[in-house]
Every structure is written in structure tokens, then in C-alpha cells.
Image (cartoon, rainbow, N blue to C red):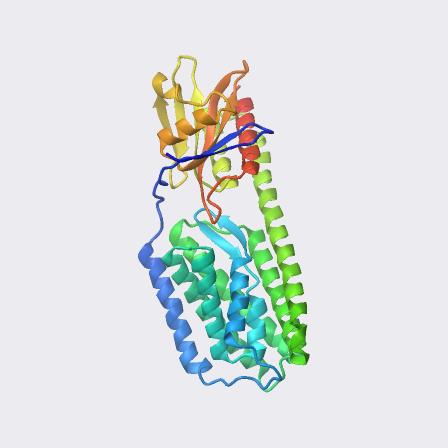
Amino acid sequence: MVHRRLVDGKLGVAAVTVGRTARPKAGGSSAAVSSLIGLMAVVGGVLHLSLVRTLTPLAAPVSVDWWVLAAGFFAAGVLVAHVTVRSESHTVTLVEVPLVIGLALSSPTALLAGRLAGSTLAQVLHRRLPARKVAFNLSLAYVETVIAIVVYRAILGAGVPPRSIGLIGVLGAVVAMQTVGLGAMRTVLDLTDGSRPPGWATLVSTASAVAAGLVGYIGAALLWEDRRLAVVIVALGALLWLGLAGTVRTRLRTAALEQVGTLGGAIAGLDRVGVAGQALTRARSSLNAEGAELVIIDGNGGGERFQLDADGRLIRIALDEATVRLLPRSTTDPVATHRYLSHRGYRDGMVAVIPGADGGPKGMVAAFNRLGPHPRFRPGDADLLESIAAQTGLALR
């Protein structure tokens, strides 16, 4: 069995990847999600055939080919920021930059071809998404792009893209596209686990979409004057992406720290069942783990395991002495951690020992099978689990 060991030297929480297949997660309705994919494709097709197909390219001094747009959409699909909610990932991109340039300087056919080709390459070759997620994302990209073209052309009318009416058309197209995208995301979350992206993620996504649209508008205006100014567009896009990635990363970390930081107050005065429930809920949420479990050792050699089911209900399981002996007794023992995680059948996980009043172990808390596009726990996640274990230990004393 091949495995990887990762030990945080500062806090000594052992995180181990084991060579087991992840346990299947209870999902939502596959048929309902497939129906949503089909609905988006049909709506996009109807609008395309009835409204977009007859549109002609705008008169412009420069024309951007579909393959150039495809390269832009590929870059936008690779340079993304993820906000993961349980098993679903809300991806924040700068796709509006190439889209707005295409609206002003390409034919509708070239824009659609560039978006679908670039997005497909990014999702299949780089992100390696499952087939159903690729189908969902491409159907959404299709209907978003068609709606953006319809709204943009309706507002622009006989106007010229680089002028003020062009900016209004860009903002209208971006708002329409963002509305469709967020609506589709909420729907697919309702069909799977019923969760919601945090409010700040929606704000960041909307703000980044508007900012990317403005960069695209500036880029189209620059190319209108001189195609050699394309380097300025690349520089502006790079700066915008760095700001977006930094904002999302910082906000995710802050949200996780807030959840863990308020645990002590939430569990003060609760019995062991209440403590276990709160600790497991915070561990699973802050670490974006598929599951978490907590074991409390009693004075007779046995113990009790607490874990959450797929619906968040607390399950209690009595443990005998033989099972308790398998528990890691130190957060700095990756061998024992690996043995325990392998015994439980988890492919990836972290374990932190709950300290007792006498200095020995009172039990342990574990998080396993990280969800989202980065399916391995990172060293910084160990800090959060260690804090949860320490606060749990204080509440149990």
C-alpha cells in the first residue's frame, strides 16, 4: 500500500494519505442534474437559432479569431479561485475578459466556438473534471454566452463598442451572465446536498465579474486602436487575477478560523454529546471534510465514538478495549495515524489527540477525505484540527 505522510512540525498533527478508495458519498438526484444540463442546452440552442444565428459581426478595425478567444478562455479556465461547499466547487473566474473582447471584436459564431473550445480544454486537460461536471459547465457556458450576446446586441443597437453605449451593453451582458450562472449553481446545490455558497463568495464572484468585464471593455477599446496593445490587456488581467486569488484565499482562511475560534464559547457548559456534535460540525465545515469523528476514552479501557451521518445527525458507537488500543496516542505519531485511518477505510485524513486533565490522551478527533478540487489536507489545516481538539479537551474536563 502506497501512502504519503505529512506531519506539521510546529503543532505535530499527523496527516496521512492512505491507499484506499474513498467511501461513496450520498449524492443528490443524478436524473435531476442531467435534466438541468439538458434544459440549459435547449434554452441556449433555441436562443442561438432564433436570435443569435442571424447576427452579423460588428464593423471593427480589427477582428479577433476564435482560436485567440479559445486561448483566452483556456487561461480563464486554468487561473481560477475555488470556493468549495461540501462536494460542489463554486469556481470564480475572469472569463468575462475574453468574453467582452469577443462581444466587441468577433462574430457571435467565433465567440461561441472560442468559449466552448477553450473551456473544454481547461476542464478536460487541466482540471480533469468528471464527465457530468464537464457537461454541466459546458451547457452553462453555452447558455451564458448566448444570453450575453443577445443582451449586448440589444443594448448596443447601432452603437459603436468603444463608446459609452458599449460600456452599458457590457455591464448588461455581465449582469445577465452572472445571474444565470449563480442561479444554475444554486439549483445544482439544491439538487445535491442543499448547501449554499457563503454570502461573501457571491459578492466576490459578482465584483470580480464586473471588474473582469471592465478590463475586457478596456481591452477591446485598446485593440480597436492598435492590436499591439494586447500586452496591456494581459498585464491588467494578471493583476486582476492575483487580486482575486488572494482575496478568496484570505477570506476562506478567515472563515475557517472564525468557525474554530467560536467553538469554545459554543461548547461551554454542554454535555459530552453536545460537545461532540459541535466539535464535529465545526471540524467538517472548517476543513471542508467529507466527514469527521471524535472518540472519547472512558476510565475502564473502552470508549465511545461520535460521528456525523450524511444528513448531519450525530451517531454514537460504543468501543471495546481492542478498538481503543488502535487509537493514536500522540499527534506526532504518523504510523499510528496511518494504521487508524487505514483501519477505518479513509483515503486521506488528519488526527489530533484530545488532551486529558492528567496530561494523557482523553480521546481524539479526526477529519477525513477532503472535498473539492484540492482533495488533500494541507499543513495549515492541521492548525485548525489541533485547536478543535484542544478546545474539546477543555470542555470535557
